[in-house]
Length: 445
Length: 180
Image (cartoon, rainbow over all chains, first blue to last red; front, side, top):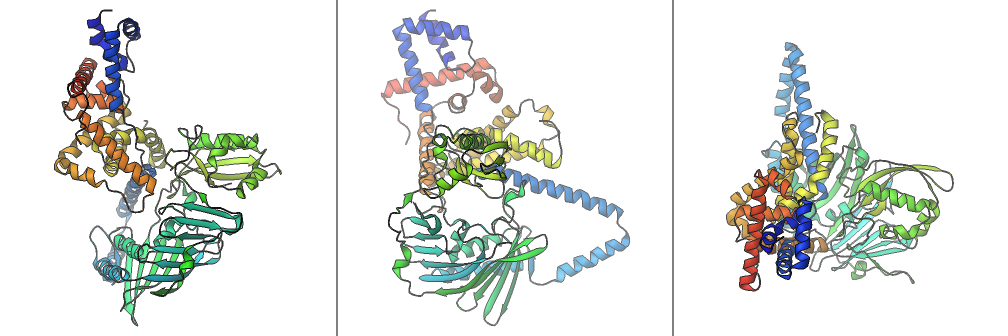
């Protein structure tokens, strides 16, 4: 090959499907010709400058949003078809009853369902919430006592209609730097203005993370009444929410009914948190101060409603001991820093199902070293328990992964025979929403 | 994709989203520089694809269809946002509740987008797009030809002329002005 031809055809070396004979000829010439080799290197340099050093990843919500949107459309279509069928077969009598029902619905006062335009109730709610937000901005401190149907040592977002009520207390200083503490007995999180600290006394587990760590999950909204109100103000524009408002004896009552949020093609997470449930939220405000006085949240499941969260008392602008915003660990226990920079050569660029297969296979072989990267959320107390219960298990079946609700990770169904002979069927929760997209175990064992 | 109905159809479609969402999202991001807008663009394109059910047999290759659609949507995006583009990039909307490392990763991504766009800004659009498809989206010249709906020879010459121009830009200035 001549230099002219090589220079003219050189770009073919950067094609993924180039003619291999041509590529071989070009490479042979490059080995013999320093001038062309130099040109090739220049071309390589240009291309490497153009190559992104960082790659964005689609949000975990992208697929979920699309599926939710399409599910809603499908649902509307089905409704439309079924309505058409009913109308075609309806008698005049049914039509007249329907007309009366429409009239009744039109005259029911103060109940609003938004349909793109804000109705009068939504407007009134929006306006009241605005004044309440302004009032809340002047608050300097708050102590909120509440009860939540949950498990005392479990995640803050976990709720369930079958759990008992657990006492929670929230302390909050609003002046900069903001500080707060939330305590549910067996799980405490403190924010000292810089970092969040999670303390689980039962497991002697102390975890330190940055200011935006997700330790308190959905509860973060409760530590900040302003964000509750802003969120509800946004709900006034949500066509899937319904409002009622009433005022008596110096108090204003506002009720908002919302649909569960999340992807429920698989409903595993349905009703496992307030946001993932159809729910009714009842707010009580002081009409004069406009401050929130009380909140009750009910989960609505198959027409049955269960009280899930109830505030007992909210005090504003009272003095709080600064010691509340630090946690002193017992002797011998140190804060473990939670990093988003989890590294693993094995557990990135694979599916969650494959990650689960590797994890269970390693547990079966007691090869814990090969899966050491997947346990950053487990500690020296919990890891030995996992090893004891699962080491040497027998894998019966690993199923197809699925997403559910608002969970950022994926669930992989598994069936295993534990060393003690019991058969366990459950879903392992794996997530890879960390910087390096490494799958880690988040629960389900 | 074969025609199916209701829940099954949605389930099948979920697999299509899983297969293409990351590539399409990257594709959109490196053409808009906005994570949020890229998400919207990809979402809209998938929804349109879903509505093509029954007509999908006429779409010979979903992959080409998706990339072509995202490419068109990004062109529309630039047409609409031309005068606001600079401000949008500067503001790089970072939600308050975003994890610190995630927020800084997002800022770095926008910087990276600006850096590479600065390199390509003097090239004719079709040459720049050919280079983007080859280098960023790792497509063969044959794939690029399908997406741009031009002959492979045209793709090759656009790539060659584009790279030559960038090389001479470097030779002339000794270094590239990133346009920042």
